[in-house]
Amino acid sequence: MVSLVVSGLIVGIAAGWVLQRGRYCMNSAFRDVLFINDYTLFKAYILALLVTIVGANALESIGQIEELRRQAFAPIANIVGGYIFGLGIVLAGGCGSGVWYRVGEGMFAAWVAVLGFLIGILTTQSGLLAPVKNFLRSFMLWKTDEGIKLMNWEQLDAYEGFARQLTLNNLFGLEGNSKWILIAILIVVALPFLFRGGVPKPQKGYSWPVAGLLIGLVIVVAWYASEKWGGGARGVSYTGPTAELFRSFMLGKEPTWSAFLVIGTPIGAAISAIALKEFKLKAPGAAEQLRVFVGGLIMGVGAVIGGGCNVGHGLTGFSTLAMASIIATIFTILGNWTMVYFLFIKPMQDMD
Image 1 (cartoon, rainbow, N blue to C red):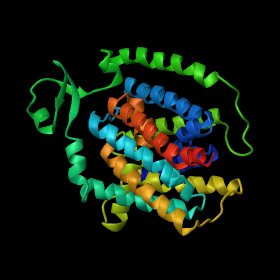
Image 2: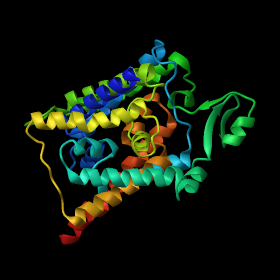
Image 3: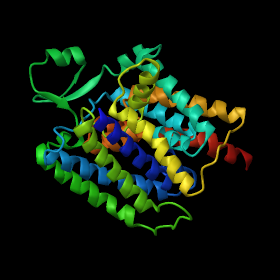
Image 4: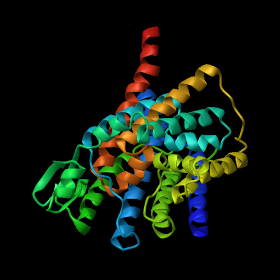
């Protein structure tokens, strides 16, 4: 238990430190591409993703992780949930990891967003919206020895053949270590984008290459630490662990490794913010508090339907090459861009 607590907290503190120092929020990374044509944080995301893909799959290949946890591909749920989550992060002013690390910067609005996030998660996991989530997630595509088949859980239990989660590599017939061919192609395709343009020097904190590299390394360490001390490889995520954290406080459930990672994130961010003299208690007006609460609520609903948040799918899940995480991430970006257009771009166009 001591190893579980300590390792979870250490990884969470490291995540919070790097997120705060890198000004890294995937809401901002996606938003800035469309809103101000700025790819700085998006480059950090792509670099973090490449590091995570290589590191996680290397740990699996050398046997340090028995098997990466890959989500079953529920296309309707991944599309709908990812899109809803993308809408919510714009209203909340931060993604799942973003609102948690901003708690450590002293932002009261982040606490309000976390509250909405939690309510949305619980309502969709086991409350009023659970039937909707269960229905949408009942349609799943599986890779079988007979090809790709659409099956629900009951059909999967009755299926006598070999079925496994659909991934980008096995979609192309690249099984086992042959997945490294695909990983190499992804790296070659991404490198020209990363090398294009210079590296702006930030006034404080980390440049995008440092932030991207460190975020990727933290998630790789989280894969290893959660496997060794956390009861199973989970990497970094904030949807399920947020619910696990509050259930442990309110219902006396045994805390998980990932719950301690969530606790550590605002602690690490606070340490970094204090060191940079950026920690400040801030309370916004009522209108903004209502907006971020609604945004957090929408985030929670979307994350549970879609099976994960921006980090749970966009980095940790994507690193497994699971189609569920890839599709959910794509639609998170599209949802983000939709809300950015209607919340920021269209009002500016109407003023002209």
